[in-house]
Each structure stands twice: as structure tokens, then as C-alpha cells.
Image (cartoon, rainbow, N blue to C red; front, side):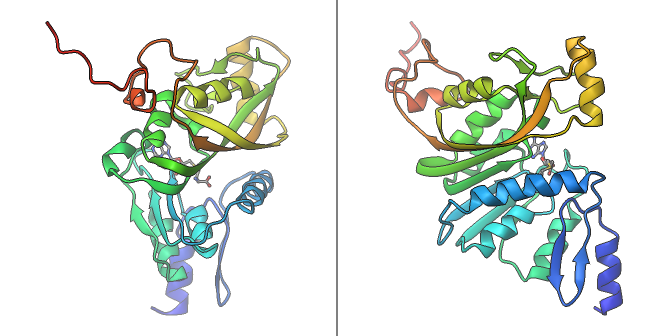
Length: 273
Ligand SMILES: C[S@@+](CC[C@H](N)C(=O)[O-])C[C@H]1O[C@@H](n2cnc3c(N)ncnc32)[C@H](O)[C@@H]1O
């Protein structure tokens, strides 16, 4: 393929991230607020520095153009599954396939894998990335349970997404439904902590980025809270480890297969009389 054809292919794609494929081949982000996104990407990259990637198996959930999958590979991961559900994706998924080709990458691609179906993989991973995904979800509890099912005892899971640190009651989350312009699920720190605990995860590290209120936030939050004062919707990178044992957040058998991690509930159910 000629250089001109390659450049045309790159230019035809709506890229989320910025890529330097070498030899002057550059993909520019089409995201309107790219400066704000660069700060988020820096925050994520800084948290990656604390992880030993060498020889690890990695699952990247909702990877879009695969930026973080290629980054995991670059940092020494032995295998990477770059997954997405393109029925949810604004980007159709061509960027991931082209970037893989241009990087001569070995990442495995599955673009019809919903976070809600992760357990069907029947695989466990050393590192799981769920970046920029949870705030798009109608059912984060079910999704986190699916992530939990892909963990072995030593797995590290990195979640990243919106978080309301101020201006909302500490023990609630925003899940408004019915507003396609706003992120669906915006937790407070405590709610995210509880949600993770409820799906048998412990937080081992967390880093925040103060974000300026974005256009969607202004209109959506005014509608939802009916308050003029905006809550700040920041970004958070949350690094977790799975745990197993008696979970104080569940007095009763938890749903979605989570009971298997809790010795109080993992005995077989008594047969119906
Ligand atoms: C903001 S992008 C984040 C891309 C990338 N992970 C990152 O952080 O740069 C959101 C991604 O979540 C994916 N997504 C949304 N809903 C999903 C679902 N139910 N299952 C899997 N991926 C989903 C979208 O397809 C899109 O690739």
C-alpha cells in the first residue's frame, strides 16, 4: 500500500486518541476537548507506572481504538485482549484494526464483547483495564460482577471514569436514564467504593483529576438536581484487587454469581422440596 493510501486510511478514521505510528504517520484525535482528554490520559498513564506489566495477560474492556491495549503491550504484557462492543461505540472499530496493523502488534481483538458478557470468555487475566467505560453503563453493578468473574486472586483491575466528588450527597450516585447526552452513571467516591466492595473488590490506590464542568454536565446536572450550583464531575483512576470472604455489604446471597466469592453463600443451594 502506498504512503498516500495509508495516510488516506488514517485520515478517514474518527480517532479518539493520538497515535504516532512512526515514519511521519500520525493519527490526530477528533475529540473536541482534546486538551482536557490529554490530562485524563496523563493521569491514567501515571497510574500505569506503578504496575509491573512484564509477562502479564491483559484484558482491555471497551478499548475503542486500542490505545491502552497497545500501551500495555509496549510495557511488556505477554498477551492483550483488546475488546469492545462496537454496537455501543461511536467509532465503528476500524481504528483499532488499522492501528494494530501499523504497529505490527500481536494484540488479540474482539469487537463484539459487551462488558455484560465477559464471563462467557471463561478466562482470567492478570491485569484488567476498564477505562472510560463505567459511566456509559445502565447497570454498573452487573458489569462489575462480570469483571470480577475474570479475576484470579492476584488480578489488578484499573477502573477509570467520571466521579462527583463535591455537590452531591456522599452516599448516592447519579443514574438518570433517559438522557443520551449525559454519562449515565456518575458515582461519588463513597458510592464507587461501596459498589466495588459489593462486587468483591478492594481499592488499593486512587488518583483524581479536577475537571472543569463540561457542557453536558451543566445542562444535565441542572435538570437532574434542579440546582443552579454544579457538582464538580471529576475523573478518577481506581486500582482494585479482588477479595473473597464474608462481605459485610451482603447480609443475603448476592446476585450475578457473586455468592461464589463468599463462604457464607457458596455452598450448593438446598434442593427444592
Ligand atoms: C470513552 S470510550 C473509552 C475508550 C478507552 N477505553 C479509553 O479509556 O480511552 C468508551 C468505550 O466504552 C465502550 N463501551 C460502551 N458500552 C460498552 C459495553 N456495554 N460493553 C463494552 N464496551 C462498552 C465504547 O464502545 C467505547 O469504546
